[in-house]
Image (cartoon, rainbow, N blue to C red; front, side, top):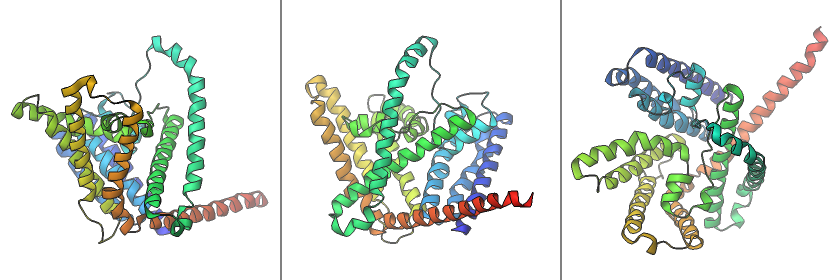
Length: 362
């Protein structure tokens, strides 16, 4: 574990130096092809860096933060688009933080809405604290699943792992948001918006699930594909290649992360991509039905909500989780997390002992 932490520190310094280089390029080279050529080596480096890490947590998180999100932000930045180009006067610290972490900056509220925002802040903060307390409790309960796996039905275990993955992601992004607010004063939007309350696939993928990825895929894949398709097949049919292209890229990037995340010969390379392509087809069907029948097709939310969540879970169990389950990725993640916590605890104890001994030398 000590060697893995050392490798992670080296990777972190490489990422820091690379993002500083990107910041300098943005100040010197105008947007367009010239800037893209200057930034392409960094894109290749970010794809290579996760290979230096071998634990599931560190390699998976680095792949998601750097190989996917940071690369897409840098490619957008090459053409003057995306979060790195939203503020021409962005500081170096803000540039590095926004490039390296899965966050997006909230728009500042207008003076007219500020008063109402302040009035609603206290009850909203109370609900937010309650939600985080519930999620911490869920994490504490779900962390014990491996010890009781042999007594639980496999499908229920898969559901609990899926739930744990969501809680871990939301907690991780929440910590990143708090760190950004404390360190550099950025107000960050949450990555999730209560996806369990989704009423349709369009609501789930567009407004609730993994909003950070959605905000990157929209300008990086969806809009360029739609604009290009509009010239070929017309604006009416351009949504089909735009949506399918977006879901295809999302599936391929998930496959890439799993390539870094899991070293296993039993994983099917196209299961995850099929999951996203299936959802792309279903989403287009849903949009077509809404346009064709309008309000007559709309079902009550009490019906569409459970149907949506049930469909997402069912397809996830059939196409997304089996590969991870066959490679015992969750079990490895638990073992590595325990080892990491033990290592950090040991080092913290050594630091505390050192600090206690300091006064005796004075």
